[in-house]
Length: 321
Image 1 (cartoon, helix red, strand yellow):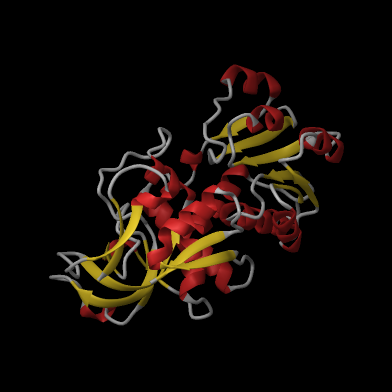
Image 2 (cartoon, helix red, strand yellow; image 1 turned 180 degrees about the vertical axis):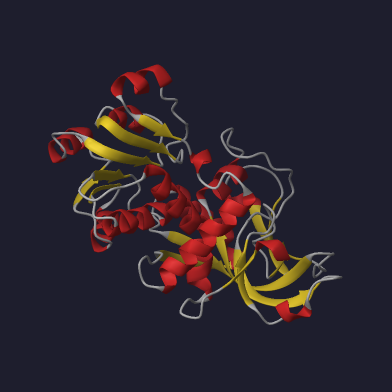
């Protein structure tokens, strides 16, 4: 099979294609002929050896999400799975490959209206966005700030907030991304790369905001947290700015703000599985749609990582073996 290997932590060019023996599924596993492999921002952080990324033993095949067709079943696995259209996690690694292994307990049937790319795009980003939205308890009439509003998670958060009847303010870092955020329904867009972005944000919400979805962290957190009014919720779900920023619990309590961590999403494997099912169902019913901004051939995984790190991508980035 064709796969992409990272021999060591480093720049995107540590990723290189290789031809490897086809994997064989073990007990409780199936093999999937990959149609689309998802790239997450955390993949780029793992590859780079970021201290805020989960540890990974190298060499490795990155990727924890694929969609495709089951082509082989392991010992003891119901052969009815063979030929099924599925999307699944892959145990934390192994997704950047033409063939991937997965546990049957992780398999999701892809609803008929959805294609393989859409399903792969919804696997991680859909479950995260649905879980964050529910944890925040967005209500009609509230004002919600979404960072990276043209991103994979951010774009879905925007759609969920709008469906809940909220007013949305979207942050993004380029004119193209701001245009896309508006196409998703964002009411007010602000370029967070502009020097006066926080001033513009305060002008857009002079009475404060009710919910912030912060996927950036770093210095952005301090600017955003000060806008949340009493009774509001601050949801920390990413560190695209390079560092997580800790919010002092005493300061949050004094301000009457509830800080919601990423760990509030799917506290158990069963809960995570259910969130994926819900995201797929919402997409099948047309309530949300993932943004697939760009696709790359499997052998071009290094270029895909470089594009993500350069912040030139919009929405989800997929590899198509």
